[in-house]
Length: 232
Ligand SMILES: [Zn+2]
Image (cartoon, rainbow, N blue to C red; front, side):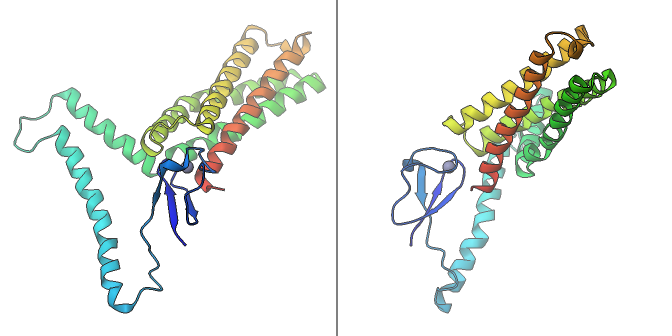
């Protein structure tokens, strides 16, 4: 059986033909490439060294590509790069490390863990009439807001470097959900700062809806992220 890999999200499909579209990221089947037959266990012993050689050359190729990238920006023997050039090289390196070590799925746990707490605290404050719970909800949102720029930055880097800025439905929905989460968080915080008694006012239900929307949007973004990471 042949194996086909999605060039956008790296999903692997087994079958004689590539799928019509990728079940994970949604790009068309034309973006799938046929993987070389890697049935190592079935390969005769005589062919084994060849397979091993293939394995060792892959990282070498990667290293060569990395060196090439470095040389493109910094040619040996050339005068040292200006400060801006050096900064660009460091930024590029930081971006590569961020994607390699999964900075986005890691950092996104901060807002995704805290957002439900904030929403629940506001709802409890609304039901019980206790202002201290609303204050606790607001403080939780401060931590969400602090983490969002890092989450957005690592997310964009991953989208650019790992998924070639593919704009299929799944990525559009994910970007939209992130935008809704951020907007709702900022709106809720500003509203609370302007009127700390909002949950005792007649507009309390709108405030609660904003927070539920924030929770739902974060859930959607997280669900899609999980789909992309686990490919199921
Ligand atoms: Zn895909």
